[in-house]
Image 1 (cartoon, rainbow over the protein chains, first blue to last red):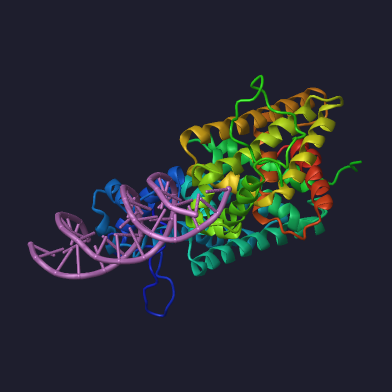
Image 2 (image 1 turned 180 degrees about the vertical axis):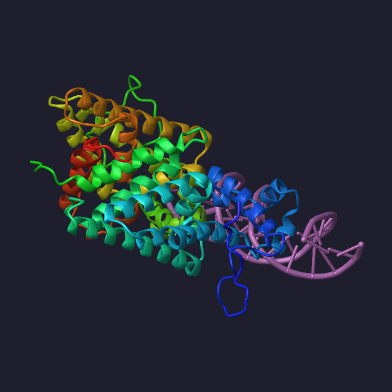
Length: 218
Length: 218
DNA sequence: GTCTATAATTGGATAGAC
DNA sequence: GTCTATCCAATTATAGAC
């Protein structure tokens, strides 16, 4: 997989390089390492996995990992960052596209669940191992997540104004939907039918959680 | 708090002692230790917290902890076990009581969310640090969780048969509801109004997720 | 049941050759 | 960029006095 954040390299005007890379994919080794590490972290937990174990999985010695990452925590950060940067940079624009609030939120949730299913272990690690990040790195991740959540809340609120959703608290509903969807990464199996999964959860979210104000509960 | 599982002590006929204990609460120190440990585990992660740190929080030295728990992992196990035994032993009977499936599920969810809110850090640790348990201990916990989930699925299915719920897949819906509810432990604040929280989530679950089959999505 | 002292191991990270 | 060899700090757990 690509999508493992590269270290910040000064570049032309300081902006991100075009997505079509010229060379043979710089940091391909980084991606391999991060991918192997994510598998181990997901299965055994960040702290129980040693650098030697990760190294062995990609065919090198522990010390050689430090040619690609400055520390073990940097590997975890790269994994967690990829799991928040992609949603923010690629899914959030779906909320700014044409269409009704419900259509735009549906597009975002579709992309979100597909991304989660395609990167299940990374997603799980990014959710679960936040405490192992340095405070600075953790702040970056939580900022991304807060922004994402805020944008979802806003489109829910827009849907309420447009008469498409019926919820008391858009903030609560947004959190509930995201928790429900992110919960998938805890139990998803490789043989799960992702198309069916996506449509089921779209129904649970858009026709369920976001339509819950239908009758009074005692 | 009470509710920290005691080690298995041979007792009369081999059954659990009556819940009203004779002495000055045996293992009160155990409960204090587990409570302090859960706070640290929740904030910094299991592996980054040392026995010395836990010990200091309860006013003793690291070595003295071993008079109450045989290992650090035993502390974690006690925390995780309390968070699955209470739901199974105290909440599941609500599903076997009188009333319609929706009423019984409402009672269970109320109890579940209240328990979660009353033991937020323990609940979070029990969810997040499963990988740090020994395989044997982890198996006990996951067995409890699977049983709980299965019982929720069954009452959802009963509600569908009774015409109270409208879902395609009771299993999927049960998982979605539990993920949504358990997500609370990640963001709950001490100043949150728990009564309001409980009723909001009952609405999201019973009138939302479990009523989602209302129209066809393209 | 708590203490001081320490054993024993682990595991992240570095040095320096190639 | 990878290797071998090693350092060094941290930490769980134990021994044994009180």
